[in-house]
Length: 411
Image (tube, rainbow, N blue to C red; front, side, top):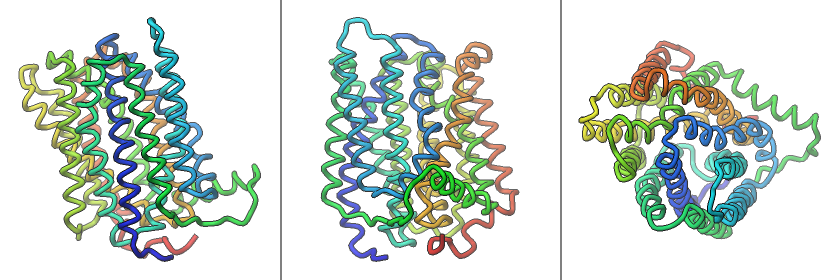
């Protein structure tokens, strides 16, 4: 497959996706600030998280079958357009004086359906366009873009929600989606044609092939399992970060934005390191180590006394670095281990398998916050993540990943 001039092509994708990520980050943070300051409830934040995640988990595996058959460029365009349309509709609804939580949950649900198509398609295009030895660097640059958006997004979201209503803030997401769609018109993304027609039986067969691609690779299946356990710990904690800032460290919306920004700075640094330097050691070592480091940052965040806001900021930055290194290494490992024809299904399965345990965790977020306290929840989740990292180091099948010939050229 021809992969010359891939960098120039990817530049258009990166520009559009950066604007989209920036505006989405601003809108997401504005919604979190609005919910946190209005309701100050872990349960409300947890339900918002479930609304934003559960649709992806439920339809994700079947979406992957479609992504592997459809033109991935068109999938990304229509997904962005659907998200923009849903958001635009919600701006009119939310102009009412009394805003119901059900409307916010509906907005997050609609955005989640669009993301269920967009995220796997975006991850699945890289091996079609990028030389294999450049995949980790591309993942690093993707992390940098996400990081810059997570730095500037909260600041932009805080500024927007300070001076505008939540309905008006949502227009940012519509603008970002429009820019992302326009940028895709300037690129050509290879399309792997599938000759057989899609039927229920064929769709189920394609889905089973995706499952088998994971199941028959013992190391990859165990890596998925460890990632699921880690996500089960991470998602409730991610939802409770604003509450830890407000309740434990006595902060407000600007302190909340500082934490979001420093997390983004850390992710930017991690992505920058991967983009600038070639990694000569096993990516699995990176994945396992970052599990442990991220767990440590969570544990320290909950253990620090309420007057240690600055140390909390520092460890949050370190957590951002570790999350960036983990995500890029994990995605690249999948791209190297799985054939391009199967990546849509495999990434969709991964997102679904990772999300389902986190939804279960989110269901108990309110109870966890009320019974053991937000700070103690951070400590417990951090310790569990560290255990996952240690176990992974002592799993031979996982440690062998990347040491054999990749499957990229076979189905």
